Image 1 (tube, rainbow, N blue to C red):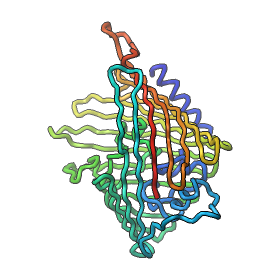
Image 2 (image 1 turned 90 degrees about the vertical axis):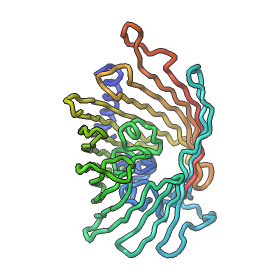
Image 3 (image 1 turned 180 degrees about the horizontal axis):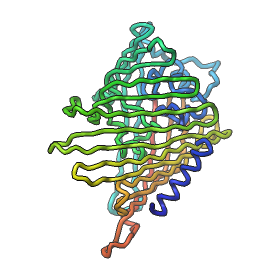
Image 4 (image 1 turned 90 degrees about the horizontal axis):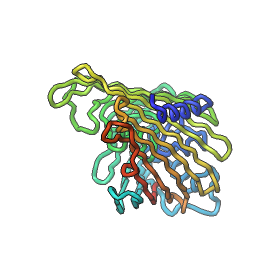
Length: 375
């Protein structure tokens, strides 16, 4: 393992060993880590993320604190009627590239424009639908089984794997196939016991396609434990997709994740490996990792430092990359956040003689501003 990879791996492993992401891994794992609450406390989906329930709506209205605002009532109520609730998430971004003549983007980008609808048909069954910019991202029925803490989800959803970071460009998300556009169709069972959560999915493995012609299904699992100030967990998946030329490549993904909270500081991290066994006998091994530290400077202001690592093929040094992010996040108003950060990416390369070369023309620097609102 190369030096840069080894250093980041050791750092992530050290954090995990001392109790290093939110065990239930919602779309905002930072909130779960700060409050020591399971994601089901704030979201309709027990695995976390997506539509908020009444507690999640109130948490956002109270500027992401557990202290109710006595002198402020919500401007509106997301309940349409008894048993029917709506929700939404909007996130826009402006990005400016800097100090790179080969890439000079200056663009506004709509990252998310999601609308949610949930109908509680009875005490044991809820229908959930989500659409993001004209695309159905979730459509499932959630069945609460007689065994306490056990649910069964059937339909279209994003399987639970690792830390579901809000930023889908985190290398452990899109790069591993568990990002923003990788919804699957199938079934998922969740079992919650005190601080532990086990989620197991059986899905098509077709990464967003409506139909799957492959009789082999994909299996994905995640287990976590978060008793208080810390949380640890593990994820794994197995898929055997069939390509257009009938080639069968078996793909494995597995990793560890965790978080540690000490006062106003939260540190979270994830380390994943992946192996694709090609039909002709070769294999491709990849790794992805991140470590993030969030410091609460003020009840409404958080400083963020994040390190990302991606190597799509451990046998090819010239395609790995490291990334560092430094930014601030603030609750501007109830249910409205502002985020600003600078991000630098180092893309490895090689010179004409095949020697390893970083090359300033491959390094990228970005200045980003985001506005996020949701209920």
